[in-house]
Each structure stands twice: as structure tokens, then as C-alpha cells.
Amino acid sequence: MSLTHINNIRRSDLDKHIHIKEFILYKLIPNKDVVSYILNIVIKEDKYWVDLGYEISNIKYLWIEYYFNIILNSFGTSDYITTLFSKIDCDYVNIKNYLDNYICDKYNNIKYLPEYPGIKITKIFYNLLDIDRPYTVKIRGIYEKRLNKKEKDMILEFIEKNKKYIEKIEMIFIDLQYINIINKHLKKLSNILNNI
Figure: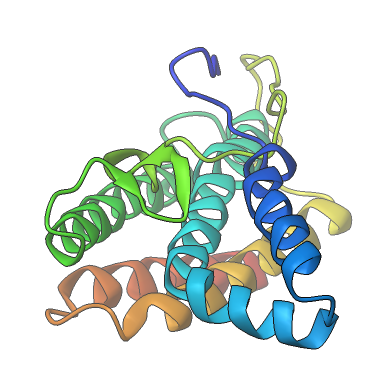
């Protein structure tokens, strides 16, 4: 998978802006607790969205692609488990679209996050990524139709991470349609994996 379409903004580069603010404040107020308190108040909401953006981008572009390649290598393109993984990928597209619309409305369509001037509002759920390149695998013609224990455990752990992320963002959604769909797909995937 090519990531050339993504403006890969590393978290450490992004947080330099916050560290500069912290340094300037510390010069004015030489009390670390007070400076931390002020920064927390100022950046709390923007940081929340940036954290969600990094998390969903890493799930989408790293974890889904990584595990999808493992599934493709073991089951091929036409197996139900592969189709289900593809549905989960599409579910995240819908969730990212909903979150993108939500944040654009919340920030009244301003162009950049106030406390993170390097991040466009419309890129929060699409362009924040901590990775250099994802895992890729060659698809071969004969499929074993099974996973080894390590792969199975990793994918089950991935499902749990997804469930935790979904719980975290569920409060944002007024209409739980997308949440219900992805939860249904994750549950089906978990059931299939537990029976392999």
C-alpha cells in the first residue's frame, strides 16, 4: 500500500509547537505545575481531537492494512473473513467522514486547529500518521485457510483495540448507525477467529 497521498505528520514534530509554548510560559512563570495547568486548559480540546486523529489513522492505515494482508495471504480475496475485514475498512471510512463533518461544524469551518496551526481541520482524521510504511505481503494462489496462533492472537488483540476506540468515540455520535455496524462486524470477525 502506498502512503504517498498522506501528509505524514509525526506526533513529535506536531508537539514541538506545544513545547515551545511551554518553554515561553516557563520563562514568564517559573512554576512547572502552573505552566502545566495553563497549557492543559489551553490545548485540552484541540489535543483531544489530535489524539483521536492519530489513533484512527493508525488503526486505518497501519493495523487494518497489516492484518488485512495477513488475512489475504491466508484466505485469499473471496473468503468471508476477507470480505468482513474489507467491510470493517469501509466502516472506518464512514466513521472518519462522520467525525470530519462533526469537527468542521464544531470549529465553524475554520481552516486550522487553533493550538496546532500545522493541522488543517479537514485533515485531522486522514493525515496524522506515526508510521513510515505498512506491512505488505505477496498474495499467492494456494491459501492455507488458517492462521497460526500468533497471527490469530494479534488479530484478536486488534479487535479489542478497535472496540476500545469505538467506545471512546461513541459519545460523539448522535446517530449510532455507524457504531452499531462496525461493532457487529467486529463481533462477527471475533467469532470467526475464535472458531478457526
